[in-house]
Length: 126
Length: 185
Image (cartoon, rainbow over the protein chains, first blue to last red):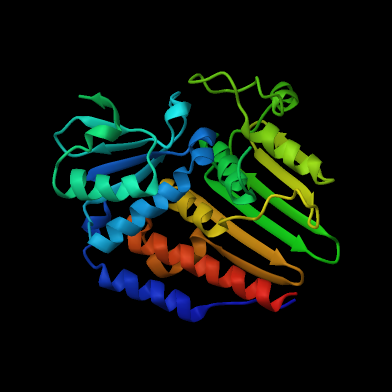
């Protein structure tokens, strides 16, 4: 049996770690939170792809003060994928039926510019 | 039905984590000679008693209160049985649960493996305080990674929250799976 190891790739990880010296940016206090519904209903509707695009957009835009989290089914299965955005000191906004293109809009408009993407909002909690 | 096996692995693992597991072990086995495709998720979560275990493939049984239908396991069972296989669930209250699903690999209805790297990434980002191991066997070859291996480099779980680390993990697993598949058959 052959055991394959990718030492060089783990070296890439080490480099990422060393370039992110400011670990405080990776902790969740005082940050914007993005929460993706990852129940069976969310997974079936494409929540994992939505989460992947969120991470890619955050990486592309260099947005470090954002925590990406997941949650289970909250009973609105027909509106999945659901994505909640909570900016510090602002109401929790729930977006429904979120596709990969919507993620790009939500991050550019809501996270960067502070403007809620009204046509995808299905709920707001103060 | 979920679209592919990677979505089932994510769904079952989410069950494990909601059952309080601190360790989730994911194993995928593909073996051409035995015409076998197997996915297995083992956890050290709260486990199930005999009554719960008897109900687990019933879509109208769920521990959740948000809705009254639980479709993950029934879907997986149906998919496996369609492909000449089946599911096996072993569980012990207080110890954990192991779920495996076996498929005939050449079955025309066999779900594709799907994006396994994205599943592992979603789990490790979504549950940074839990530990995961991932094993992929393709014929005689094996690739293993997991939280322990990554922490040897990162030394701090906070790094799992970095998008750059998450995306690295996804491409690391993708590259290793592709290497195994191209070299193993």
